[in-house]
Image (cartoon, rainbow, N blue to C red; front, side, top):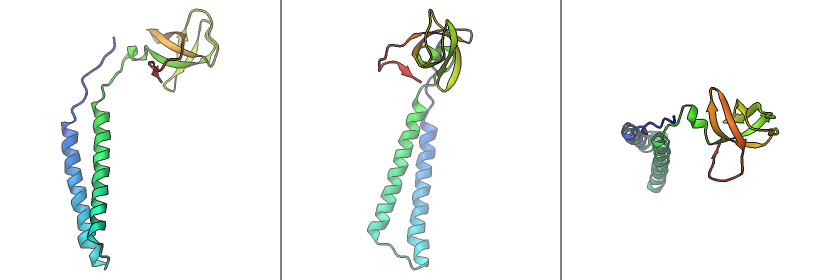
Length: 143
């Protein structure tokens, strides 16, 4: 059975991201407007503005990437392998090994499949994957 829990809440992440961005901006302004002038380094107003805008842009980008990662559903369990495409590591005749997601898995098929061939996982019995030769298509899960 494929288990797909709800995606994680991003409310806490948003609160921390906003608080962190405010603290970063205040610290940056203190450095640019208070500490640097102590060393006779005076920046034009447009340079300070550009630095703050760049910092805010980086913060927005990292926030969006983090929120996107946290909002994805987690897929786990043995059924998460079904539909994955792998590469035969040792000839399947009818059993052998395939590589999926960087891991070697014992696999079985009907007939013989040579090493280097792409295979599609159709089922899982215990810890053995049942596979068929894969016909290339963009809609499959590539791993």
